[in-house]
Image 1 (cartoon, rainbow, N blue to C red):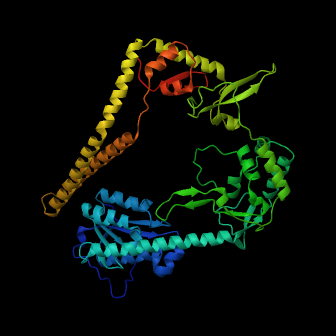
Image 2 (image 1 turned 45 degrees about the vertical axis):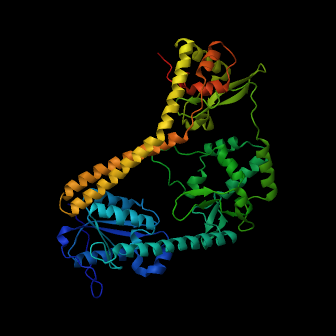
Length: 543
C-alpha cells in the first residue's frame, strides 16, 4: 500500500480535536484540499486558514494525533467547488475505486464541494456503497459517529451553495460595473497594445507592434488585399498576434505553427479597440454551475470610447471597413451544383467548394477545391485538389447509374424499399416497450446494489466480494442507461419515406438528376488528391 511520506507538523490545535478514531489501523486516509480561483472571497470568509498550506497542516496534525496512515494528499488548487470533475478529486475517486482509500478527510464540507447535488451523489450514495468514512474536521462531521450526520451535511451544503451563488452574482456584477467604466478585463492585451504597468485595466501602445497595426490599416486603405499583407508579414517573419501577446497555451506539441492569414488581417481591420474603444461583454457564462460560455450579440457589447490612445483615426477605420465590405459577394453558379454538401476531401474530410476560373479563351470554368489546403497553401495542412466540377459530376452520375443497372430487377427494388419502410415503422412502434423494459431492468440493478450493501454490513459477504459485485452491477447499469438513451434518440427520429423504386427508375432512364434524388440515395462522396472517387450509399443495395 502506498503511504504518504510528507513531513508531519508538530503543532496541534489548542485542546486537540473533537473527533477521535478508535481503530485507526483499519483506515487508509485520503486528504482532500481545495482552494478556488476566487481566493479573495475564500479568505474573506475563512481567513488565512483557508489557504491550501494551512488546510494541509491542519489535516496532517489531525491524522498524526489519531495515528492514521495517510495514503495520499489530493490538492485542487485554483479549482471551483461548483464542479466535481476537478483533476485531484477524480484521482481520489479512482483510488477509492481501487480500494486504496477508505477514509476521506477535509477541513470543512465546502472544501469537498459547494453544490448540494454533488454532496448527495458522493457522500450520501457513493461513499456509503464503497464503505468510505467521511470526516470534516473543523465542523465535527463524521459519517460514522456524528448524530444526524446526513441532515447536517444537507443543511451545510445548502448554505455552501448559497455562498457560491452569492459570490458568482457579486463577481458578475463587479465585472459588469468594470465594463461600464471602460476597464480592460482581458487576460492578454490586444495586439498593438500593452497593459499599463501602473494600471492593468488600461492599455498603452506597444512600441514594437503598434506600428505594424498602423501599417496594416494604411496598406488596406491604399487598396492592398489582406492576403497580400499577410504573405508579406510571413515573409518578414513577423510574429503572429497570438505569439506576440503570449496566448499560445492551447497549442499542441506537434501542432503546425500558425501564420498570418487574410482572416487575421480582416479581424484587426474590424477591431474598434484601435480607435481607443474598450469593448467588453462579448461572452457570458450560463450559470455558476456550468462551465459553458456563450457568445453575445454585437449589439449587446458594452463599448466605452476614448479610454486609451488610438492607433488609427476614425476616417481611416471607416474607409478600410468599406473597402473590406465592398469585396463581399455571393457566388452565383451558372448551373445547379448537384454535389454541394455531398462531396468531401478524402484526405481531411472537409467539404469541397467551387471556384470559378476564367481562362484565356474567355470561358469561365468551375473547379472543385479543398478549402483546408486553399486557405493557406504554404502550411500544406492538406493536399491540393483540382477537379473540373462539371466533368466530375458527370463521372459520378454515370458511376451511380452503372452500379444501379447491376442490381436486381426493378420490381425487387420496390420490395427492398417496402421492407425498409415496414422495418423502420415496426421498430419504431417497439421502442416505448423496449425503453420500459430497460427501465425495469435498471430498477432491478438498483435493488441489487442495496442488497449487496446490506449483505456487506451484515457480514454475509466480505469487502472484496462486495467490490467485485458492485463493479459488475455498475457496469450493467451504465450499459442499460446507454441503451435507453440510444432508443430515446431513435424514438424522436422520424425517417423520411423514400420511394427508392422511383429514384432508381429515374436514374436508369437518364431523366434529369436532382439534388433530392442524390441526397436520398447517397450518404457522401469522397475525392482524393489522385482523383480516386468513392461513393457511399445510404442503403446496402448490392447483391
